[in-house]
Length: 406
Ligand code: SF4
Ligand code: SF4
Ligand code: SF4
Image (cartoon, rainbow, N blue to C red; front, top):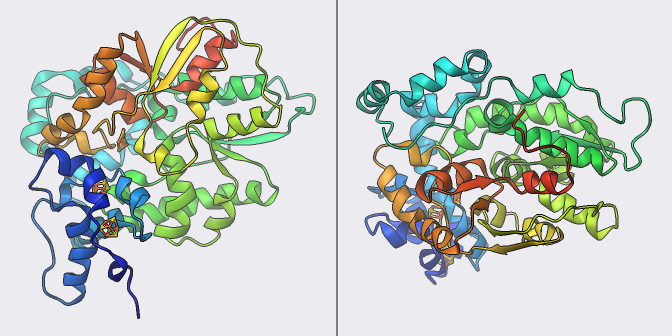
């Protein structure tokens, strides 16, 4: 029997592209910590390697491996085994269950955001939970996205939308922290003749996967599939505005977690920019943009690159008169979801993201564009430049709002 790790050619291509190995030589890397360790573990020779948890989960190694191995999953395997035996440590449990706190936090955002920004509380969190005290926590909004969505009146409520229906998977950050992005998604889709449908949904589960809790991630995944399946069966596209959620729905549900019915749903899942670009290619996208006159560096999230869909955001932004958008191509931002908030990983996260921050500062642009929420938070923190989702720029160019955040 040929096991996946036996296919490793030891070509070191994955090592050359690994953003962590570049800045942290103590990290075993995707070759030694992936197929190399898997072989030793299968022989019962060794269970873990030191510093293996420094993996960001960016999946760059998976996209470059010529043998089709997914080293990131092999690197994550010892953590998965550890968590299945002992459960998630308290810090990881808290960082991966932000959606549980969301409904309460949006009721009292002043109190929660104030507490999460308070130095004594951050010092206590660092001492007790080893959550780094420097990086600002994302701020909760004063209402959830779904509240806004179900309060409003769709322009297609009383007449059929010319381009049919689209299901929107918004993810946790839009639901509790960035509802304005969800609004931009909905209004741009409606402007283009789509009726937006919002089935019940939970966190996609990627933070749980990254922290080794595949069982809890599968439970989230089964819930989401249960509510997405009927739409996929009707052939309705499912669009996702967070690149991390899109990768989870497209790849992790069917392949990593092996969830029943996941492949049929995955075939209808689109990254939001991928979907809008496909609309443009079919002549369905309106291009009644007003000029914006702006240079916009685009940071491609690793989890968007892993979907192998090109750079639809850059192509779409360049349709706007006066916009010059380009792919920054400076590597990983180093944020990687919960990773950059962990005390022992925070310095590695900053070192990984330095090239992105330097390139953004050197660009002289007033703001950057990225479709991943944790990339945007990292860019704003490390580069000191405002970072927006590409849908927000399209929304502005369509003249759909006055720049308000709801
Ligand atoms: S997932 Fe990213 S950080 Fe982890 S081993 Fe692969 S390339 Fe390196
Ligand atoms: S890129 Fe693939 S084949 Fe090459 S060393 Fe890494 S895991 Fe092995
Ligand atoms: S791993 Fe990323 S660029 Fe690397 S990302 Fe996701 S948060 Fe940003």
